[in-house]
Amino acid sequence: MELLIERGADVAYHDPFLAEIPRTREYGHLKGRRSVAIDPQALEGFDAAIIATDHDAVDYAAIASLLPLVIDTRNVFARAALPPKTW
Image 1 (cartoon, rainbow, N blue to C red):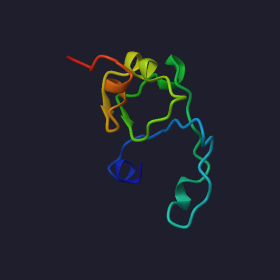
Image 2: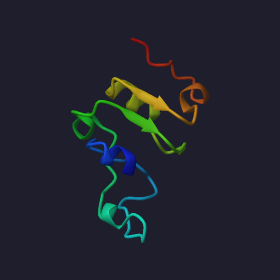
Image 3: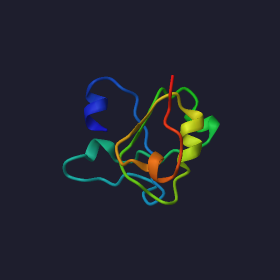
């Protein structure tokens, strides 16, 4: 998140186990950011998603259907038998 923010990206996250980022020594400036829902209204305007952690409780099919680009660093699309994004 930090590298993307430093480069000017508007960044949000979804995590079913972390509703809000707590204050930490290294990333205190991220404190208070809240996990966004995976639904059309919440993801409207997003250009991409990066899957950085594989959680069973995440609806990856919804992410694939709602966003034009998904960078899957955990290979969850293959494990969930979801087709890769093609253009």
